[in-house]
Image (cartoon, rainbow, N blue to C red; front, side):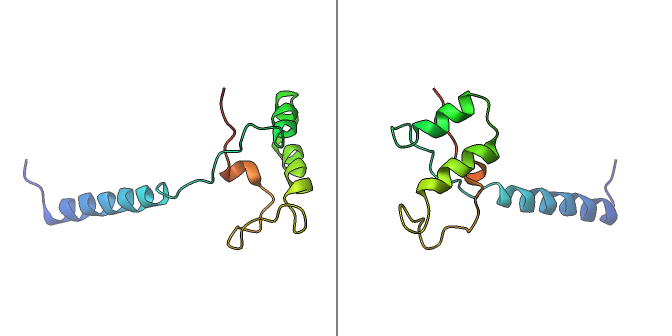
Length: 89
C-alpha cells in the first residue's frame, strides 16, 4: 500500500497536534502541601468529607496579604488544590 501526499499531510498534522498537546502537560505543578501542624486542619477537613472549596477557604485564612503572603508571581486564584497536591500517606 502506497501512501499519497494527502496521507502524509494527515499523518504529520496528527503528530503535530499530539506534540502540541504534550507540551501542555509539561508544566510543573506547585509544591505539595506539607503535612505539618500548620496544614493539619486542611488535611482533617478533607478527611471529614468537606469539599475542596471549603478546604481552600482554610488556606486563605493564613495565606493572605498580611499573615503569610503568596510569592509575587503567584496566580491570583483561591484554588489551591488545583495546583498543590496533598501528601499521600
